[in-house]
Length: 82
Image 1 (cartoon, helix red, strand yellow):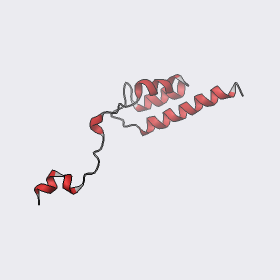
Image 2 (tube, one colour):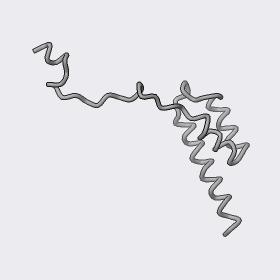
Image 3 (cartoon, one colour):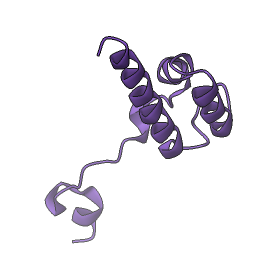
Image 4 (cartoon, one colour):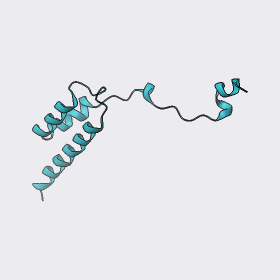
């Protein structure tokens, strides 16, 4: 069990990283194109996935968050058209 656990952890980390790369916006991925990140994650087990998590993931900027829906009485455009 002691030899298998690290291997299972690395494989699960690699699967997580590959799925996250596949779901990432190609225009916001940092440092390398997405296909190169997938190659790095597969060819460098553990190190590629950790590199993706630390430096490759797209940054979350507050300007890209969707605005919550507004009630009609809070919307200035709606009130202006009354």
